[in-house]
Amino acid sequence: MEQGLMTCKDSSFISKLTSTNMTKKVFKNQKMLFSWLAATVLFFFNSLAHANDFAVIATPPRFEITGKPNTVNRQVIEITNASTTPGKYSIKTADWTLDENGGTQFTEALSPESCRPWVALERLQISVPSGAKYRYRFEVKPPANTPAQECRFAIMISGDEQTAKTADGLSFPFAGRLGIIVYVAVGDVKPNLEVVASEVKTIENVSKPVISIRNTGNAHGRLAGFLSGTDAKGQKLEFSPSSLPILVGETRKISLDIQQAEDKPLPTIHYPITIRGNLEWDGKSTPFEQQFTQ
Image 1 (cartoon, rainbow, N blue to C red):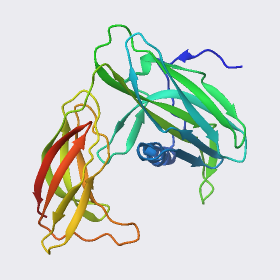
Image 2: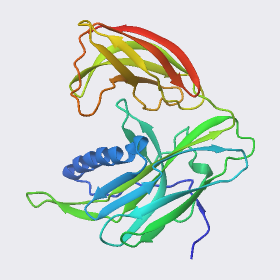
Image 3: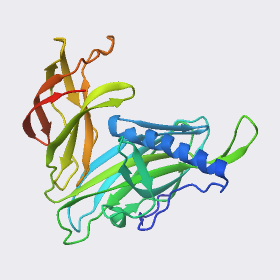
Image 4: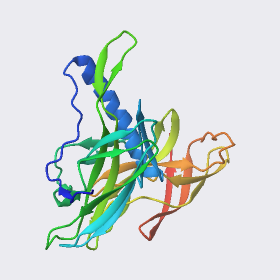
């Protein structure tokens, strides 16, 4: 029998680990792994977290919903247990931000941009048989007279604590986790993006043209658009901006990525190169022209 939804004003999600230095290092590495699993969250229709027998698929991996003051907005996450054993999961809220590389960083501390005081969860623990799906409910109710703003939070799905062993026999506890990102737009909110700088930056051993984008609006935004350029050796290239979100009040470095067929090697840019076209976001379009010099 389903229980009534529970409010989550002070939810805590971080798994408890031992206090040894080795465990702290392992936990740091796991945070990076789970952030990657959740983030992507930002780019796929399904998200998958896997750690031993923790294998959970959450659909959708991201919500961008519209809220009204004093009005309940109900949503459903489809949680699939993709492991070969029954799963027991704890579900709580968290806050999050993005690091300079676009990785999602979760925290139990309540942030100024958080919606968590307005969130109610169906329940804090669920059991899902192997291969089965669970339609999990949550709702958001902004208070009356809430001004126009965008807030955000995450719903964290955590497995039972497990014990892992290193090659030299050292044991440490850990728990698999998956984060679902939620944006809530209350009232008339929009991003306002502008290019404030440009540079050539090495990303994963590849030199890329990068632009710094400032968001002075009151909602997050993502760049789109088609750009083209001819490099110093006459090579004609097509580009598109990275789809990383630019949060409210943030200035974020956005790479301009070469558009190339998957079966062809990525061409090398010979600088300088002038890139032209239009940058688009939230129904707006602005001309762009910039020379990039290494």
